[in-house]
Length: 302
Image 1 (cartoon, rainbow, N blue to C red):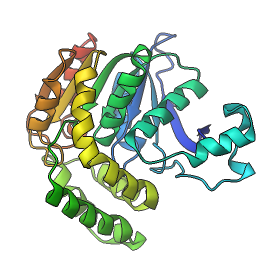
Image 2: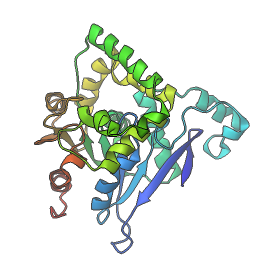
Image 3: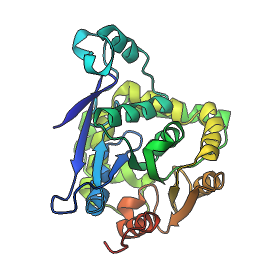
Image 4: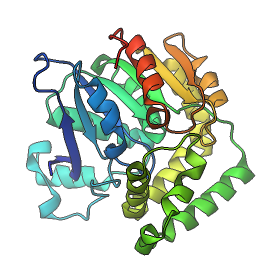
C-alpha cells in the first residue's frame, strides 16, 4: 500500500485513474469524514476518473494513516524540513484542530508536487476543506462540500455530546464487527436509503481502528464553541467557486445548516439531494454525480 510522510506522519493515499482516458487531466482530491477513510469515496472517484485523476487519502489518525507519532529519529523525514530538529519540532506541534488538518492537506499536495487541484470533501473533511480554501485559494479550482454547515453553540448539548462521544470512542471492542447485523445498527442514524453491506462493514471497521487521540480530539474540535463561532466566518470568506450538497434527511448535519452556510457567500451554490441522509454520494449516486457534473460543467451522463 502506498504511504507518504506528511509533516512527519505516515499517510495512506491512492490514485484512481482511467488509463485509456486523456492525459494531463486535472486532479480531484477527496477528503473523508470523522472516523472514516478514503474507502467510501472510491465509487464516486471511479465515476469521475475519465475527467480527473482522483487522489484519495486517509487523514491523520484515521483509516490506514497513522496518528500523531512519538518523537524519534525514525519518524523524522529530513526531506520535509531543514533539519531533523526542525522536523521533530513540527511533529510536536501537531494537534487535532481542523486548521492543522488543512495544513496536512497542503503538505500532501506539496509532497506530491500538485500546485492546484479540485476538492471533494465530506462532513468533517468538508470543514477541513473550508479552512484550506481560505488559506490556499489559489490552489483550488473548484470545491464540492458534502454534508457541511454551521451550527449554534449550546453549552449543555455540546457537553452531553462530548461525554457521549468520549464513551463511544473509548469502548470500541474489535469483536463488535463479528455480531450479525451490527453494521446495520451502526449506520442506521447516518442513512435514509440502504447502501451495500460491504460499505456498511467498511464504515464499522474504520471506526474501530481509528486512532483514539485523533478520534476524540476531532470530536472536541469539530463540535465546539470555537467551531460554532469560526465556521460562519470561514464560509463568509470563501472566494473559490463551491458547491455545497446536503442530504434531505441528514440527522448529523441537517440540510438547514448547509443552507445557512451557503447563504453566507455568493461563491457557494447549495443543493439538496432528496431522500438521502449523511451519505448522499452512496445513497443516491446518480443524483449526486449529476449535481457534481453540472457544477463542474461536465457531461451529465454517468
